Length: 637
Image (cartoon, rainbow, N blue to C red; front, side, top):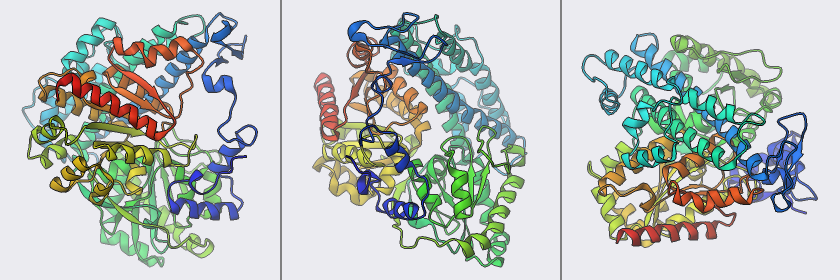
């Protein structure tokens, strides 16, 4: 019998402490629900066909189960390999679609901003020009002229047919990769056409061949990374600042019950930024004090919070960052929340029950977010951002008296700091404007390689963030510099690895580099959406090393705790990009022996990428280091 307690709950003591309160209050919670899904007293044991991806319920002849070892197929004749890869491709489509929903909202915000209709501004005009030039656009004229050219160019590219080549990918992707993709027939067209092409391929009795479906997934991943992720993050940089290193308060101790606390939650930071701008004004602080609060604070939360803290520095209003999505119920149960503002992604269906118990306002601000029983909503419109932000702040202020009078808050929760805000530009700045110092320490072996850690957080096999932190510690111990993204980034920030003092956990080479540059061994690099940004950086490193092919670089991708559909398309892109890609938990594709061979062995001869699956953190990092050392030997460094 496996009991979920202590570190099987979470790596973080603050979350463990709030879990005790949740249990005492008799509240349904993610840990108990996860445990209840298991078989025979083992929370990780589930239906073996489901775990292997060897099942299908897409037509009325099913549900079907398949077993490749005895050639047991679905009613239509589909193999376990085909079933597993088809369902993975459908997950990929969902992940891509959701990434792109965010991108479209960002572009609407850019257009409205340069037309003077939002409270925002072009914060990085030089990046606007550079990005326009990279896309082959005319970068002359006013900021508005350039921004609108950018807007219309990318919108047109999103909508070209899938059988025409994307101009964005042509302009941004490494030329060596483009040649590989063209040879394999996976150079993508417009993203909307690619989503149609992939989804149509998944219909019953259309494409049942696992290898074909895998290539279509890679093609979709390429379109997603360049057309959606890079366009999105670069545009957010242009609007809200390029991330630059600074300190940030983190962990549940950032929540003070005597303040009006507003938490923007999800993945889209627009109303979060608008609320910070208003909350910094004296009139709004006075309104909060008028109802008995010490003041008004906006607290960054999950990936919306990650987008915000990377770009804006903390003060007594924009006070800090709580953590990642699995601790959501713990955050809500602190008794410190007045308004939980839910934009696209990572807002749990259980939240209304917590809102009723702990007396906070639960307000969807994205048209895709809907809660059962919640009718109050403020759907984000760029042109109304300031008015909407004011409405949300007033809701939180109006909530304070009831919440403070009726809910006992949890006191004494941990608060620590992290250094956040690393980006390609800020890394170059720290290195004196050139990659040479980084390349030199890689060439001379002081640093053995780089790991892009892009992860969610999950309860599978371990407690929240336990596996991610273990993997990161093992990486830096072996002198591998880590760039962290996604909910995994939140794990490492709260877990203490994004501080210069964490150098003492690193190997001697990496420690020396950290001491010289005054940086942590784990660089906080952003959200899951920054997968495209890190690919762009890797392309720059490839060029700086004289055109070394991506698969030959001493670089790996790691997703120690992948969880949802966005993560699946990130991993597929990693394979298409030519990266050694470590994934945990074991993905639901193991029912197909031929599919597993394709992803973990044969893919290396196609794109150069390779999938590695391992549940033990030490063995996982050992294998990553073997790959890095082989590439170092290949390069003669």
